[in-house]
Image 1 (cartoon, one colour):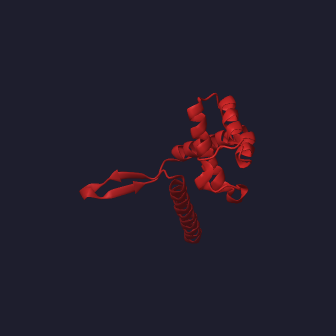
Image 2: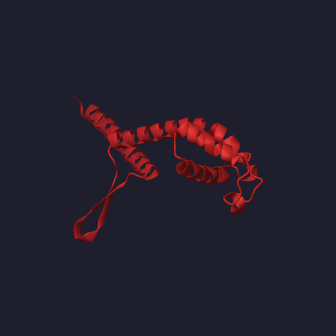
Image 3: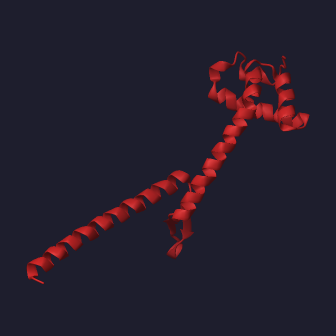
Length: 144
């Protein structure tokens, strides 16, 4: 093999290695950003009291994404179950809302009232203009 051919192969190999190293850095940055965004960075005790932060493994990242997808699907199902109850809450028909909560979720009266309070707060955040009543009087008057 001629010296020129050998040098060309070395240059090409060097370029391929540089490209590979750049891709590895990009992949490492992507893993880090995913772990930060997903909240799954690991913090471990290091030497002399320092804290070492490390990224999750690819399977751990995929597992967390799957968990979030499952949680989202559960939230969608819950929103579907709450849609009719939400309409009652927005109409200030709390007694009917409590009856619907008990019927839909099979809860006690006390738990139904607590769930109504939590849902009211969530709806108030999502749709602040959808309520005619101010939040302070919400618990004190029951109209149906």
